[in-house]
Length: 498
Image (spheres, rainbow, N blue to C red):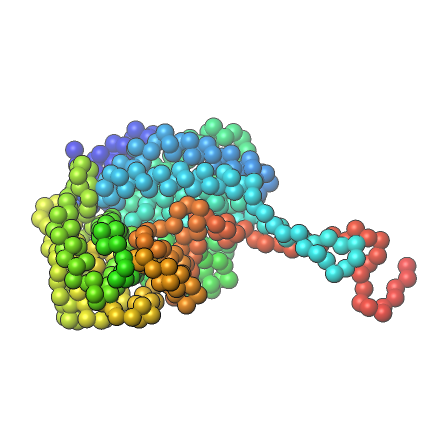
Protein backbone atom coordinates (compact mmCIF):
# COMPACT_ATOMS: atom_id res chain seq x y z
CA UNK A 1 0.00 0.00 0.00
CA UNK A 2 1.34 3.44 -0.91
CA UNK A 3 1.69 6.07 1.80
CA UNK A 4 -1.16 8.18 0.41
CA UNK A 5 -3.44 5.14 0.14
CA UNK A 6 -2.73 4.41 3.79
CA UNK A 7 -3.57 8.02 4.65
CA UNK A 8 -6.92 7.77 2.93
CA UNK A 9 -7.57 4.49 4.70
CA UNK A 10 -7.00 6.17 8.08
CA UNK A 11 -9.40 8.95 7.10
CA UNK A 12 -12.04 6.36 6.31
CA UNK A 13 -11.47 4.73 9.69
CA UNK A 14 -12.05 8.10 11.38
CA UNK A 15 -15.33 8.43 9.52
CA UNK A 16 -14.11 11.05 7.05
CA UNK A 17 -15.13 10.84 3.40
CA UNK A 18 -13.70 13.94 1.70
CA UNK A 19 -15.31 15.19 -1.46
CA UNK A 20 -13.00 14.68 -4.39
CA UNK A 21 -12.66 16.41 -7.75
CA UNK A 22 -11.76 15.04 -11.15
CA UNK A 23 -9.13 17.73 -11.57
CA UNK A 24 -7.22 19.91 -9.19
CA UNK A 25 -4.46 19.69 -6.60
CA UNK A 26 -3.93 16.01 -5.74
CA UNK A 27 -3.23 14.86 -2.21
CA UNK A 28 0.40 13.68 -1.97
CA UNK A 29 2.80 12.02 0.43
CA UNK A 30 6.48 13.01 0.63
CA UNK A 31 7.26 9.56 2.01
CA UNK A 32 7.16 7.81 -1.37
CA UNK A 33 5.88 10.50 -3.75
CA UNK A 34 2.51 8.77 -4.09
CA UNK A 35 -0.54 10.79 -5.08
CA UNK A 36 -4.21 10.37 -4.27
CA UNK A 37 -7.45 12.00 -5.36
CA UNK A 38 -7.73 15.75 -5.60
CA UNK A 39 -9.91 17.34 -2.92
CA UNK A 40 -12.80 19.58 -3.83
CA UNK A 41 -11.88 23.11 -2.86
CA UNK A 42 -14.23 25.13 -0.66
CA UNK A 43 -16.25 27.42 -2.89
CA UNK A 44 -18.63 29.28 -0.58
CA UNK A 45 -16.17 31.30 1.49
CA UNK A 46 -18.81 33.96 2.17
CA UNK A 47 -21.09 31.33 3.65
CA UNK A 48 -18.23 29.97 5.78
CA UNK A 49 -17.59 33.40 7.29
CA UNK A 50 -21.30 34.14 7.77
CA UNK A 51 -21.72 30.86 9.62
CA UNK A 52 -18.73 31.69 11.82
CA UNK A 53 -20.16 35.12 12.66
CA UNK A 54 -23.47 33.54 13.68
CA UNK A 55 -21.59 31.01 15.80
CA UNK A 56 -19.73 33.84 17.52
CA UNK A 57 -22.97 35.59 18.49
CA UNK A 58 -24.08 32.43 20.28
CA UNK A 59 -20.74 31.16 21.63
CA UNK A 60 -19.81 34.43 23.38
CA UNK A 61 -22.90 33.99 25.59
CA UNK A 62 -21.66 30.63 26.87
CA UNK A 63 -19.71 31.02 30.15
CA UNK A 64 -15.97 30.64 29.70
CA UNK A 65 -15.64 27.61 32.03
CA UNK A 66 -18.36 25.89 30.01
CA UNK A 67 -16.44 26.68 26.85
CA UNK A 68 -13.44 25.09 28.52
CA UNK A 69 -15.44 21.90 28.94
CA UNK A 70 -15.63 21.54 25.16
CA UNK A 71 -11.86 21.86 24.92
CA UNK A 72 -11.48 19.29 27.70
CA UNK A 73 -13.62 16.83 25.73
CA UNK A 74 -11.58 17.56 22.62
CA UNK A 75 -8.43 16.69 24.54
CA UNK A 76 -9.97 13.36 25.49
CA UNK A 77 -10.88 12.62 21.87
CA UNK A 78 -7.35 13.52 20.79
CA UNK A 79 -5.97 11.01 23.27
CA UNK A 80 -8.19 8.32 21.79
CA UNK A 81 -7.22 9.20 18.21
CA UNK A 82 -3.55 9.98 18.90
CA UNK A 83 -2.10 7.01 17.01
CA UNK A 84 -4.20 7.62 13.89
CA UNK A 85 -3.55 11.36 13.79
CA UNK A 86 0.17 10.86 14.37
CA UNK A 87 0.33 8.33 11.57
CA UNK A 88 -1.38 10.80 9.25
CA UNK A 89 1.20 13.45 10.16
CA UNK A 90 3.93 10.98 9.22
CA UNK A 91 2.27 10.01 5.94
CA UNK A 92 1.31 13.50 4.80
CA UNK A 93 4.12 15.66 6.24
CA UNK A 94 6.93 13.08 6.28
CA UNK A 95 7.75 13.30 9.99
CA UNK A 96 9.27 10.30 11.70
CA UNK A 97 6.91 8.36 13.98
CA UNK A 98 8.11 9.90 17.25
CA UNK A 99 7.71 13.42 15.87
CA UNK A 100 4.20 12.68 14.65
CA UNK A 101 3.25 11.41 18.09
CA UNK A 102 4.93 14.42 19.68
CA UNK A 103 2.93 16.83 17.55
CA UNK A 104 -0.39 15.31 18.58
CA UNK A 105 0.79 15.38 22.20
CA UNK A 106 1.26 19.14 21.82
CA UNK A 107 -2.39 19.37 20.81
CA UNK A 108 -3.37 17.47 23.95
CA UNK A 109 -1.13 19.62 26.13
CA UNK A 110 -2.55 22.90 24.86
CA UNK A 111 -6.07 21.60 25.48
CA UNK A 112 -5.10 20.93 29.10
CA UNK A 113 -3.62 24.42 29.33
CA UNK A 114 -6.72 26.03 27.81
CA UNK A 115 -9.12 24.23 30.15
CA UNK A 116 -7.42 25.87 33.11
CA UNK A 117 -7.24 29.15 31.25
CA UNK A 118 -11.03 29.19 30.85
CA UNK A 119 -11.24 30.07 34.55
CA UNK A 120 -8.36 32.55 34.47
CA UNK A 121 -9.24 35.17 31.85
CA UNK A 122 -8.35 37.77 34.41
CA UNK A 123 -8.79 41.53 34.18
CA UNK A 124 -7.60 44.24 36.58
CA UNK A 125 -9.45 46.25 39.19
CA UNK A 126 -8.29 49.87 38.92
CA UNK A 127 -8.49 52.70 41.46
CA UNK A 128 -10.56 55.64 40.24
CA UNK A 129 -9.66 59.26 40.89
CA UNK A 130 -13.38 60.04 41.21
CA UNK A 131 -15.20 59.44 44.52
CA UNK A 132 -17.86 56.76 44.43
CA UNK A 133 -16.57 55.17 41.23
CA UNK A 134 -15.27 51.74 40.41
CA UNK A 135 -13.05 50.89 37.43
CA UNK A 136 -12.16 47.49 36.06
CA UNK A 137 -10.56 46.00 32.99
CA UNK A 138 -12.44 43.15 31.33
CA UNK A 139 -11.50 40.90 28.44
CA UNK A 140 -14.32 40.18 25.98
CA UNK A 141 -14.55 37.66 23.10
CA UNK A 142 -13.18 39.08 19.86
CA UNK A 143 -14.93 37.29 16.98
CA UNK A 144 -14.15 34.70 14.30
CA UNK A 145 -10.46 33.77 14.10
CA UNK A 146 -8.85 32.65 10.84
CA UNK A 147 -5.98 30.18 11.31
CA UNK A 148 -3.65 29.66 8.34
CA UNK A 149 -1.26 26.81 9.11
CA UNK A 150 1.86 25.47 7.41
CA UNK A 151 2.78 21.94 6.32
CA UNK A 152 5.58 21.40 8.84
CA UNK A 153 3.25 21.40 11.85
CA UNK A 154 0.00 20.43 10.15
CA UNK A 155 -2.11 20.00 13.31
CA UNK A 156 -0.31 21.40 16.38
CA UNK A 157 -0.30 25.04 15.26
CA UNK A 158 -4.05 24.96 14.63
CA UNK A 159 -4.57 23.50 18.11
CA UNK A 160 -2.43 26.20 19.73
CA UNK A 161 -4.73 28.79 18.23
CA UNK A 162 -8.04 26.95 18.37
CA UNK A 163 -7.87 25.82 22.00
CA UNK A 164 -7.23 29.38 23.16
CA UNK A 165 -9.70 30.96 20.74
CA UNK A 166 -12.51 28.61 21.79
CA UNK A 167 -12.17 29.26 25.52
CA UNK A 168 -11.93 32.99 24.77
CA UNK A 169 -15.33 32.82 23.03
CA UNK A 170 -14.21 32.83 19.39
CA UNK A 171 -15.11 30.39 16.60
CA UNK A 172 -12.31 29.24 14.27
CA UNK A 173 -11.94 29.01 10.50
CA UNK A 174 -8.99 26.85 9.47
CA UNK A 175 -7.20 27.15 6.14
CA UNK A 176 -4.57 24.40 6.30
CA UNK A 177 -1.60 24.18 3.97
CA UNK A 178 -2.57 22.84 0.56
CA UNK A 179 0.23 20.31 1.11
CA UNK A 180 -1.38 18.78 4.22
CA UNK A 181 -5.19 18.97 3.98
CA UNK A 182 -5.91 15.40 5.06
CA UNK A 183 -4.66 15.89 8.61
CA UNK A 184 -6.92 18.95 8.90
CA UNK A 185 -9.98 16.97 7.84
CA UNK A 186 -9.09 14.24 10.30
CA UNK A 187 -8.65 16.76 13.13
CA UNK A 188 -12.03 18.30 12.35
CA UNK A 189 -13.60 14.84 12.55
CA UNK A 190 -12.06 14.34 16.00
CA UNK A 191 -13.33 17.76 17.08
CA UNK A 192 -16.81 16.85 15.85
CA UNK A 193 -16.77 13.88 18.23
CA UNK A 194 -16.14 16.28 21.11
CA UNK A 195 -18.99 18.49 19.90
CA UNK A 196 -21.37 15.54 19.88
CA UNK A 197 -20.53 14.81 23.52
CA UNK A 198 -20.70 18.47 24.53
CA UNK A 199 -24.39 18.97 23.86
CA UNK A 200 -26.55 21.77 22.51
CA UNK A 201 -24.54 24.74 23.83
CA UNK A 202 -22.19 24.61 20.85
CA UNK A 203 -23.50 26.43 17.78
CA UNK A 204 -23.05 25.25 14.22
CA UNK A 205 -19.89 26.55 12.58
CA UNK A 206 -17.76 26.72 15.72
CA UNK A 207 -14.89 25.12 13.80
CA UNK A 208 -14.73 24.96 10.00
CA UNK A 209 -12.06 23.78 7.56
CA UNK A 210 -11.46 25.51 4.23
CA UNK A 211 -9.75 23.46 1.52
CA UNK A 212 -7.93 25.67 -0.95
CA UNK A 213 -4.75 27.38 -1.99
CA UNK A 214 -3.30 30.85 -1.63
CA UNK A 215 -6.37 32.50 -3.18
CA UNK A 216 -8.62 31.18 -0.42
CA UNK A 217 -6.27 32.47 2.26
CA UNK A 218 -6.11 35.88 0.61
CA UNK A 219 -9.89 36.16 0.30
CA UNK A 220 -10.48 35.21 3.93
CA UNK A 221 -7.71 37.52 5.16
CA UNK A 222 -9.41 40.41 3.38
CA UNK A 223 -12.80 39.76 5.00
CA UNK A 224 -13.55 42.47 7.57
CA UNK A 225 -15.84 40.10 9.48
CA UNK A 226 -12.73 38.24 10.71
CA UNK A 227 -11.04 40.44 13.33
CA UNK A 228 -7.96 38.23 13.82
CA UNK A 229 -5.87 36.31 11.30
CA UNK A 230 -3.25 33.98 12.79
CA UNK A 231 -0.86 32.80 10.09
CA UNK A 232 2.13 30.48 10.27
CA UNK A 233 4.42 29.90 7.31
CA UNK A 234 6.90 31.63 5.08
CA UNK A 235 7.95 35.25 5.40
CA UNK A 236 6.56 35.88 1.92
CA UNK A 237 3.16 34.59 2.94
CA UNK A 238 3.20 36.46 6.21
CA UNK A 239 4.06 39.75 4.57
CA UNK A 240 1.12 39.38 2.17
CA UNK A 241 -1.27 38.49 5.00
CA UNK A 242 -0.08 41.38 7.16
CA UNK A 243 -0.59 43.91 4.39
CA UNK A 244 -4.04 42.59 3.55
CA UNK A 245 -5.22 42.54 7.16
CA UNK A 246 -3.68 45.94 7.97
CA UNK A 247 -5.43 47.50 4.98
CA UNK A 248 -8.75 46.85 6.74
CA UNK A 249 -7.32 47.68 10.21
CA UNK A 250 -7.64 44.11 11.42
CA UNK A 251 -5.28 42.18 13.67
CA UNK A 252 -2.70 39.69 12.48
CA UNK A 253 -0.78 37.18 14.59
CA UNK A 254 2.21 35.96 12.60
CA UNK A 255 4.70 33.20 13.34
CA UNK A 256 7.10 33.08 10.41
CA UNK A 257 10.73 32.26 9.72
CA UNK A 258 13.45 31.39 12.21
CA UNK A 259 17.11 31.57 11.18
CA UNK A 260 18.12 30.26 14.59
CA UNK A 261 21.65 30.22 16.00
CA UNK A 262 23.57 28.39 18.71
CA UNK A 263 26.58 30.02 20.37
CA UNK A 264 29.16 27.53 21.70
CA UNK A 265 31.73 28.92 24.14
CA UNK A 266 35.06 27.42 25.29
CA UNK A 267 33.51 26.29 28.59
CA UNK A 268 30.64 24.43 26.93
CA UNK A 269 30.02 20.72 27.40
CA UNK A 270 30.74 19.60 23.84
CA UNK A 271 29.04 16.23 24.24
CA UNK A 272 25.85 18.02 25.21
CA UNK A 273 26.29 20.49 22.36
CA UNK A 274 26.73 17.73 19.76
CA UNK A 275 23.50 16.04 20.85
CA UNK A 276 21.63 19.35 20.79
CA UNK A 277 22.93 20.23 17.33
CA UNK A 278 22.03 16.85 15.88
CA UNK A 279 18.48 17.01 17.23
CA UNK A 280 17.75 20.63 16.37
CA UNK A 281 19.52 20.88 13.00
CA UNK A 282 18.24 17.72 11.30
CA UNK A 283 14.95 16.98 13.04
CA UNK A 284 11.96 17.13 10.66
CA UNK A 285 14.62 17.26 7.93
CA UNK A 286 15.35 20.88 8.81
CA UNK A 287 11.74 21.92 8.24
CA UNK A 288 10.98 23.50 11.60
CA UNK A 289 10.79 27.21 12.29
CA UNK A 290 12.97 26.35 15.31
CA UNK A 291 15.55 24.40 13.28
CA UNK A 292 19.17 25.24 14.12
CA UNK A 293 20.67 26.86 11.01
CA UNK A 294 23.69 28.81 12.29
CA UNK A 295 26.36 27.38 14.60
CA UNK A 296 28.59 30.10 16.08
CA UNK A 297 31.61 28.43 17.69
CA UNK A 298 34.57 29.89 19.57
CA UNK A 299 37.82 29.47 17.64
CA UNK A 300 39.41 27.37 20.40
CA UNK A 301 36.79 24.61 20.26
CA UNK A 302 35.70 24.83 16.62
CA UNK A 303 37.81 22.01 15.24
CA UNK A 304 36.90 19.60 18.03
CA UNK A 305 33.19 20.32 17.70
CA UNK A 306 33.15 20.15 13.91
CA UNK A 307 34.96 16.82 14.00
CA UNK A 308 32.38 15.32 16.35
CA UNK A 309 29.52 16.71 14.32
CA UNK A 310 30.96 15.31 11.11
CA UNK A 311 31.06 11.83 12.63
CA UNK A 312 27.53 12.18 13.98
CA UNK A 313 26.14 13.36 10.62
CA UNK A 314 27.81 10.52 8.74
CA UNK A 315 25.96 8.01 10.92
CA UNK A 316 22.50 9.62 10.66
CA UNK A 317 19.85 7.14 9.43
CA UNK A 318 17.94 8.88 6.61
CA UNK A 319 14.95 7.07 5.20
CA UNK A 320 11.27 6.18 5.27
CA UNK A 321 9.87 7.86 8.39
CA UNK A 322 7.54 4.92 9.00
CA UNK A 323 10.48 2.59 9.56
CA UNK A 324 11.90 2.08 13.02
CA UNK A 325 15.37 3.56 13.27
CA UNK A 326 14.88 6.37 10.75
CA UNK A 327 15.84 9.69 12.33
CA UNK A 328 15.58 11.91 9.25
CA UNK A 329 12.62 11.70 6.89
CA UNK A 330 12.04 13.42 3.55
CA UNK A 331 11.69 17.03 2.53
CA UNK A 332 8.10 17.94 1.78
CA UNK A 333 8.46 17.89 -2.02
CA UNK A 334 10.77 18.24 -5.02
CA UNK A 335 10.69 22.05 -4.81
CA UNK A 336 12.14 21.88 -1.30
CA UNK A 337 14.91 19.56 -2.52
CA UNK A 338 15.78 21.97 -5.31
CA UNK A 339 15.95 24.83 -2.79
CA UNK A 340 18.36 22.67 -0.76
CA UNK A 341 20.60 22.20 -3.82
CA UNK A 342 20.54 25.91 -4.73
CA UNK A 343 21.44 27.02 -1.21
CA UNK A 344 24.42 24.68 -1.04
CA UNK A 345 25.66 25.83 -4.43
CA UNK A 346 25.33 29.46 -3.35
CA UNK A 347 27.15 28.76 -0.09
CA UNK A 348 30.12 27.34 -1.99
CA UNK A 349 30.08 30.33 -4.34
CA UNK A 350 30.21 32.61 -1.30
CA UNK A 351 33.32 30.91 0.05
CA UNK A 352 31.81 28.06 2.02
CA UNK A 353 33.58 24.75 2.64
CA UNK A 354 31.41 21.63 2.53
CA UNK A 355 32.15 19.58 5.66
CA UNK A 356 29.66 16.73 5.31
CA UNK A 357 26.43 15.76 3.55
CA UNK A 358 24.61 17.64 0.84
CA UNK A 359 23.79 14.71 -1.46
CA UNK A 360 20.39 13.87 -2.88
CA UNK A 361 19.39 10.29 -2.14
CA UNK A 362 17.78 8.07 -4.73
CA UNK A 363 14.41 6.35 -4.66
CA UNK A 364 10.93 7.73 -4.18
CA UNK A 365 10.42 10.89 -2.16
CA UNK A 366 12.66 13.93 -1.66
CA UNK A 367 15.37 12.52 0.61
CA UNK A 368 18.64 14.37 1.19
CA UNK A 369 21.73 13.93 3.34
CA UNK A 370 21.83 16.75 5.98
CA UNK A 371 24.74 19.13 5.32
CA UNK A 372 27.25 21.14 7.33
CA UNK A 373 29.01 24.04 5.60
CA UNK A 374 31.77 26.14 7.15
CA UNK A 375 31.36 29.77 6.13
CA UNK A 376 33.85 32.66 6.22
CA UNK A 377 31.15 35.15 7.24
CA UNK A 378 27.40 35.62 7.45
CA UNK A 379 26.91 35.95 3.73
CA UNK A 380 23.62 36.34 1.88
CA UNK A 381 22.83 32.62 1.92
CA UNK A 382 23.47 32.42 5.67
CA UNK A 383 21.17 35.33 6.35
CA UNK A 384 18.43 33.72 4.27
CA UNK A 385 16.39 30.90 5.81
CA UNK A 386 16.37 27.79 3.63
CA UNK A 387 13.78 25.31 4.88
CA UNK A 388 16.09 22.31 4.66
CA UNK A 389 18.78 20.57 6.80
CA UNK A 390 21.72 22.89 6.18
CA UNK A 391 23.90 23.99 9.12
CA UNK A 392 26.26 26.93 8.57
CA UNK A 393 29.29 27.04 10.92
CA UNK A 394 31.08 30.31 11.75
CA UNK A 395 33.74 31.12 14.36
CA UNK A 396 34.30 34.01 16.76
CA UNK A 397 36.85 35.26 19.31
CA UNK A 398 35.01 37.57 21.75
CA UNK A 399 31.63 36.77 23.35
CA UNK A 400 30.14 40.14 22.45
CA UNK A 401 31.06 39.42 18.84
CA UNK A 402 29.16 36.12 19.02
CA UNK A 403 26.02 37.81 20.36
CA UNK A 404 26.28 40.45 17.64
CA UNK A 405 26.51 37.71 15.00
CA UNK A 406 23.51 35.93 16.53
CA UNK A 407 21.42 39.10 16.30
CA UNK A 408 22.62 40.16 12.83
CA UNK A 409 19.79 38.51 10.85
CA UNK A 410 16.23 39.74 10.32
CA UNK A 411 14.68 36.57 11.74
CA UNK A 412 14.42 36.39 15.52
CA UNK A 413 12.41 33.38 16.62
CA UNK A 414 14.73 31.28 18.79
CA UNK A 415 18.33 31.25 20.03
CA UNK A 416 20.60 29.43 22.45
CA UNK A 417 24.02 29.45 24.08
CA UNK A 418 26.08 26.55 25.41
CA UNK A 419 28.30 27.65 28.27
CA UNK A 420 29.23 26.80 31.85
CA UNK A 421 29.90 30.48 32.59
CA UNK A 422 27.19 32.20 34.63
CA UNK A 423 28.33 35.56 33.29
CA UNK A 424 28.01 34.47 29.67
CA UNK A 425 24.63 32.85 30.28
CA UNK A 426 23.22 35.90 32.03
CA UNK A 427 24.66 38.27 29.43
CA UNK A 428 23.00 36.20 26.69
CA UNK A 429 19.64 36.49 28.50
CA UNK A 430 20.01 40.22 29.25
CA UNK A 431 18.46 43.16 27.43
CA UNK A 432 21.67 43.49 25.38
CA UNK A 433 21.89 39.76 24.71
CA UNK A 434 19.74 37.65 22.39
CA UNK A 435 17.04 39.64 20.64
CA UNK A 436 14.88 36.57 19.93
CA UNK A 437 11.49 35.60 21.30
CA UNK A 438 13.02 32.42 22.74
CA UNK A 439 16.44 32.34 24.42
CA UNK A 440 17.80 29.06 25.86
CA UNK A 441 20.88 28.13 27.86
CA UNK A 442 22.42 24.66 27.37
CA UNK A 443 19.45 23.48 25.34
CA UNK A 444 18.89 23.80 21.60
CA UNK A 445 16.57 26.35 19.94
CA UNK A 446 13.53 24.11 20.25
CA UNK A 447 10.16 25.71 20.83
CA UNK A 448 8.94 26.74 24.23
CA UNK A 449 6.79 24.35 26.20
CA UNK A 450 3.04 24.88 26.04
CA UNK A 451 3.13 27.06 29.16
CA UNK A 452 5.37 29.60 27.46
CA UNK A 453 4.23 31.80 24.59
CA UNK A 454 5.78 30.77 21.29
CA UNK A 455 7.04 33.17 18.62
CA UNK A 456 8.51 36.66 18.70
CA UNK A 457 10.31 37.43 15.48
CA UNK A 458 11.88 40.83 14.95
CA UNK A 459 11.28 41.99 11.39
CA UNK A 460 9.40 38.90 10.25
CA UNK A 461 6.29 38.57 12.35
CA UNK A 462 6.14 39.18 16.05
CA UNK A 463 3.38 36.71 16.88
CA UNK A 464 3.01 34.99 20.25
CA UNK A 465 0.90 31.84 20.37
CA UNK A 466 0.04 29.08 22.84
CA UNK A 467 0.95 29.83 26.48
CA UNK A 468 1.68 32.69 28.89
CA UNK A 469 -0.68 35.60 28.15
CA UNK A 470 -0.99 34.81 24.43
CA UNK A 471 -4.74 34.45 25.02
CA UNK A 472 -5.08 38.24 25.06
CA UNK A 473 -4.59 38.31 21.28
CA UNK A 474 -7.90 36.45 20.91
CA UNK A 475 -9.89 38.94 22.99
CA UNK A 476 -10.65 42.65 23.17
CA UNK A 477 -9.86 44.66 26.26
CA UNK A 478 -12.58 46.86 27.73
CA UNK A 479 -12.19 49.38 30.55
CA UNK A 480 -15.42 49.67 32.54
CA UNK A 481 -16.41 52.44 34.95
CA UNK A 482 -19.34 52.29 37.37
CA UNK A 483 -20.62 55.35 39.27
CA UNK A 484 -22.24 54.13 42.48
CA UNK A 485 -22.45 57.58 44.10
CA UNK A 486 -25.36 60.03 43.92
CA UNK A 487 -23.22 62.67 42.25
CA UNK A 488 -22.50 63.21 38.57
CA UNK A 489 -18.78 64.01 38.18
CA UNK A 490 -18.26 67.44 36.65
CA UNK A 491 -15.32 69.66 36.00
CA UNK A 492 -13.93 71.39 39.10
CA UNK A 493 -15.80 74.55 39.96
CA UNK A 494 -18.84 73.80 37.80
CA UNK A 495 -22.17 73.75 39.60
CA UNK A 496 -25.30 72.14 38.27
CA UNK A 497 -28.64 72.04 40.06
CA UNK A 498 -31.54 69.78 39.23
